Each structure stands twice: as C-alpha cells, then as structure tokens.
Amino acid sequence: MRKQFFGHFVNITDVTGNIGTPALSLLSGAMHALEGYLEALACEVAPFNIKVTIVESPMEVSLLTIPVVLADQLPQYGSETPVGKLRGLLTTSNVFPERAFRNTILTVVSLGGLENPPGRIVVGKEAIGQIKDKLALLSEDLEEFSAISISADYENYNIF
Image 1 (cartoon, rainbow, N blue to C red):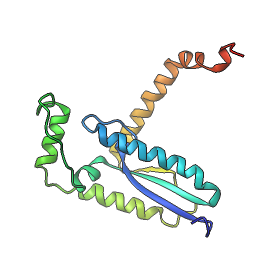
Image 2 (image 1 turned 60 degrees about the vertical axis):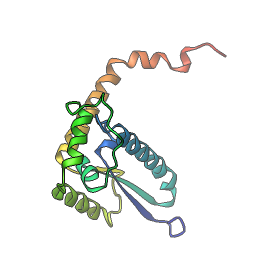
Image 3 (image 1 turned 30 degrees about the vertical axis):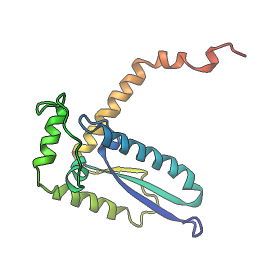
Image 4 (image 1 turned 90 degrees about the horizontal axis):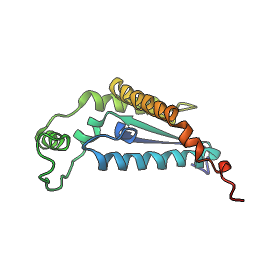
C-alpha cells in the first residue's frame, strides 16, 4: 500500500469497542485495544494516502456469529447477574443475527471506493444511540470536573 501510495484498511469490531459493556469486560477491553491501535495506525499511514476505517457492528454480530469458549462459571456470577444472564444466552442461543450481520456487510461494501472514507462508522440505530449516550455522559463529566482536570496542568506547578 505504501508503494502504490493508496489503500484502505477496513476492520470490523463491534460497539463494545466504544462502550464498556457489563458481562463483556474482556471483549470490551480487547475491542477498545484494537480500536486504539487502529486510530494510531490511521495517523501513521495517512502520509501514504492509506485510509483506516473501523466498522462498529452491533454486538450480537460478534457474540452470535463467532464461537465463544466460556470459562468455568464462578458462584459469584449466578444466573440472575448480568454475567450469568449473558452466559445463559450464549450457551442456549442458536439464533443467527441475520439482519445485523447483513447490515454490517452492506456497510463494509458501501465503503469500497470512497475517496474519503470515515475513520469510524457505526452500524445500526441502537448502536448509534448507545454511543451518543456514552458521549453525552463523557461530555457531562468533562464539564463537571474540568476544574479538577485543569488544575493538574503542569503550568500550575513551579518545579523549574
């Protein structure tokens, strides 16, 4: 891609890469790490006219289309806890998320050939709503605690 001076990486993650999701802490952590890597990679390859797009699919695409191996259940995570409920769903469900899967594929295909593709695209109305809610909470926290954050700036310390 560097040699030809163009290219486009498209990586499919899911909405847990943007939102910490109860009962999916390991998946959320892995997806966050992957998305952070891809954001940094996008900056590194931009001078070579190489684009990077993160496609955040609905979480059921990952959960219900990829084989999941579960560790032994701990007694603290009984069937009524979020972890227990998800575990029950994953062990008993044989549903294929056809619509979410199809919409993810259509989104990926729609990116092909775009001169200026997005750095990130979210698939599905529900996922968009979840991310908007997260951004609203983040924005509120930034505003509410900005004085504390700003007080940590190094200009406030006379160490030199």
